[in-house]
Length: 266
Length: 249
Image 1 (tube, chains in turn red, yellow):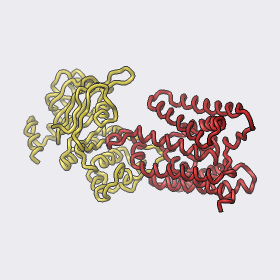
Image 2 (cartoon, each protein chain N blue to C red):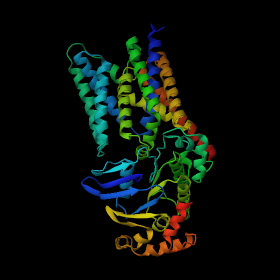
Image 3 (cartoon, each protein chain N blue to C red):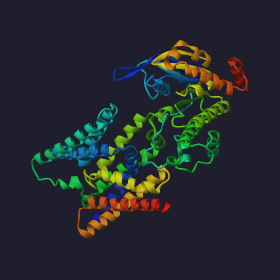
């Protein structure tokens, strides 16, 4: 079964979407979208470094994303002008990565694969990395769920209950780096944030508790992955963007549904 | 030994001293109120006490296993986060559903368990925060301007609720407020803060202190007398007697 590249692609997409859909809820609740962008853009620099030193792409991307995540976490503790600093770091790392990739001697590199994903070329090893990384993300969030939710609502409430909100934020940031490393093969560096945010946003108005929103977000992510892959095969387009298009359509329908409900009750 | 104690605490940020040499001990069962003008460091002191801020000098010691119920000044829940009152009460630890119901009733908002936090009125929201704070049966209840955004009758009712909760749980209460007349009448001890502790003592002592009058003028002294006259169960000008009366209950 795993010999079929379409099956591997579907499994890779679903695995990534589940991890991203769950973590994405926290990204939305805590307004960390720009955070996600910075970490994801830094991934391109990771690709360049990995190619330069001949290590695995996942390792290079993971390491640079981790470095970026820790850097951002440190900066966010300082308070001042984080927004601007994030912008500088994100696009600085992206530009540096783009330049570095073209400077690598030897074979020409297909940059599109890293910017927009290349899920059709996923190997068994990639699958193991995606599902392994995804499992770590889901398990960690499960373990930290209550503490993280409390810290998300209010850092003072967390402190009063003996929870260190800074630590919870660091864990989230590290998980973000893990998701970036896992997702780059599927949707590419430029669309990772979309995979985090759109399913969670689509789930928002149809959930009454954080847990239901998280489950729904994972389901919408998985559905987008499968439908996006199918559409990409039919219309012969790139898979990553197709997945995001489906997710965005689900969001649009969800938003319209909410607007209709509101009109009817008004 | 006191439940929680701040010793000689200094705190500042951005080169600005907010607290200077503040010492404060809270004993079991007492209601202590911190009053002071805007920017006097009241909320900062409370946040130092719960451990959210680390003092640059001095220290805060808590009794081992001390449970703190904290009601923040305001709590902004991001509109992207759906959460029911019941779910909120179960954070960070799961609680018994009967206990949750009971806590809502005690806080004066029975039956809102299934509502979304975002659908609550300002007063209901504050009471849900209070319900959550009392759920773990805290030794100390800390409230930071908990009646902000409530009208006068609303905040008076809120303080009566706190007094009832205190009698129920036997917990100590440390609160920050700007509503002098209501708060002072309900407190065993008042601390007047302006970066440092200007004066402290029973409400009568503080409201007569020159340092307090300098900060708040003399008008509130009259309001205090009026309030006491109305609500002190006939124990007029007999604060100590009132105190023992409460302790004996």
